[in-house]
Length: 304
Image (cartoon, rainbow, N blue to C red; front, side, top):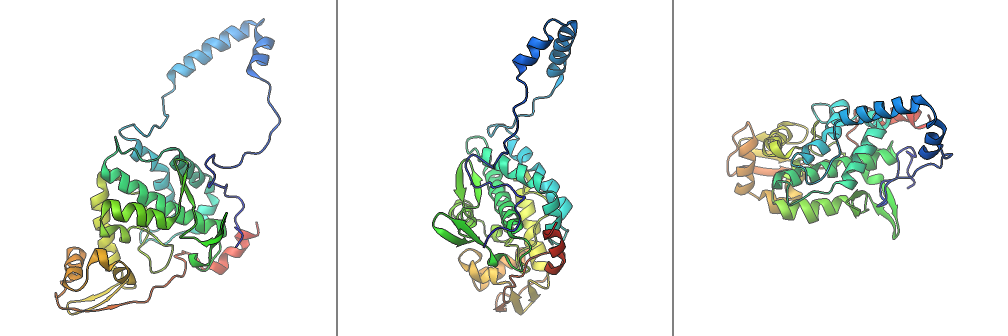
């Protein structure tokens, strides 16, 4: 399946995206030679020196104490603009603001988590943000699609499902969405709530939080996500003695638990007090795209 959105730059290469060839501008030395006999040169040099001294230093280093928070600020800006409070995504809006998403993913490529200086929560928040941003990015490449499961990404070994293809570059290494979930988030953090924070771009997936995950507030954010997810009647239907739950609780029973253990997890976040012996059924998972607008309405945008 060939990408439909050719405007988004390729971020899979360790070196980043492509650059267009441009005519070479005059060199600085050439300009200086032309100006050195002019008194204007001296005045310009003094002015530039003063201006440079006044500029703040904004270079981001992974070892900076607050680098994790600074890094994800552009992602928060995008989420607040294009994600509703109930987690629906404006993919057309993301397409119109692709440069900011592109810049964020470039920053991710250049700033892998620093285990020496970042807290464990900072690192967990980092990978949650990377996963969700990469999911949105992958959808945008092929948008409009009815479901993310329609996407097949071309790799050296052939076409792969979106979950299995290396689709995000972190520190020069390619990661698939499955690798981030199964090799990093689940084994390293052992927190069942991550399954309620990772977004599969589907109607039945957890709602996308409309701000970046932040290590300083991560526990609170994950608790709020769990409460929001359980409160959505389309996703979970709770009564004291009878539960119709999202398939996510079935797929990841090893982490959420089963029977009374699962009920104990639910009771931490549910406004309904659930009996330990409640009957449990699982709802079918709807893989339709979690789009604010019907897919048919996007055809005109694709033809621009």
